[in-house]
Length: 116
Image (tube, rainbow, N blue to C red; front, side, top):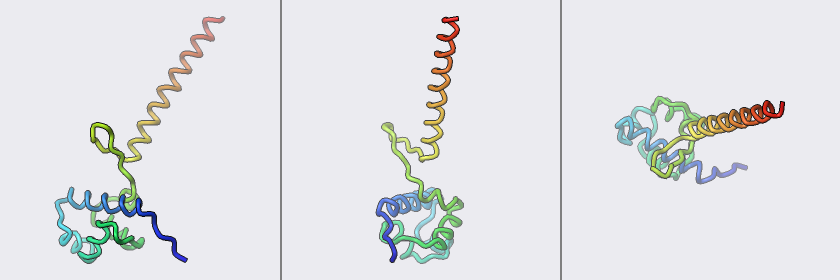
């Protein structure tokens, strides 16, 4: 039995494919030619109406010159409308946590020294 892919994954794939294709200045027709897929397939994927096989995903990512996982990474929009991907968000969280931990260590160490 095949489980349907959640619509949000299709939406992420559709958005990322369309965005990357446009960044390269490619029409759906030209992208279809480069990727070896039909125009209808590209249109259906970008419209969120079709899921892809691993072979199709590889063709798409190769034609876009990106890794497959990048097509499935959601992007988060900040209040100022700047988009960041989840990797950038995790990196930012790591920096914030490190800063907070460093601050706590200094605070505790200073308090310890004051007691001595």
